[in-house]
Image 1: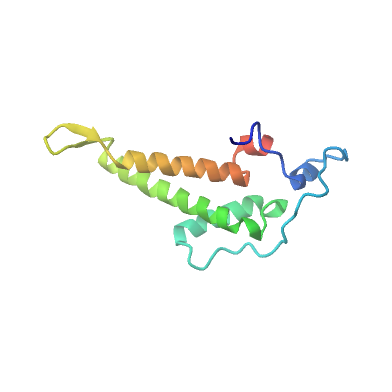
Image 2: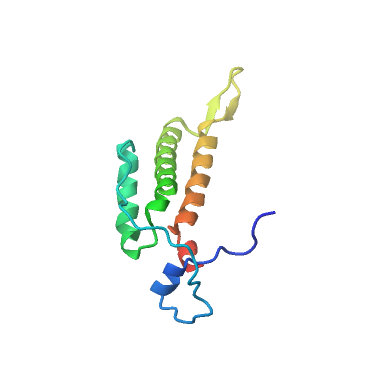
Length: 135
């Protein structure tokens, strides 16, 4: 069974928000080493743009560390796949003609939906949504 309730806020975010109560601060929380947040060399150019945008937004908070590179990469790639599939879906429309001439749902719709869900999941993990930042 999964965990219940909202995920705990990282100690670094609590400190940035001005929290000072010792009972709320977890001083034993493991803190990964800092390190460079440069994008992987094999990242697609479109995903690299997303990477740079995220680093520009959150890099100064110190919340993202080199330990987060993999999940950030997944977020960037899922976002690019979503944009590409959405553009293709916009061109072809939500319905296609089937083999017998009947209308069927465009398979791109599922690809768009799957990537949108992935983007939302990774964004929550990285604290990129308003709800993730507030909660």
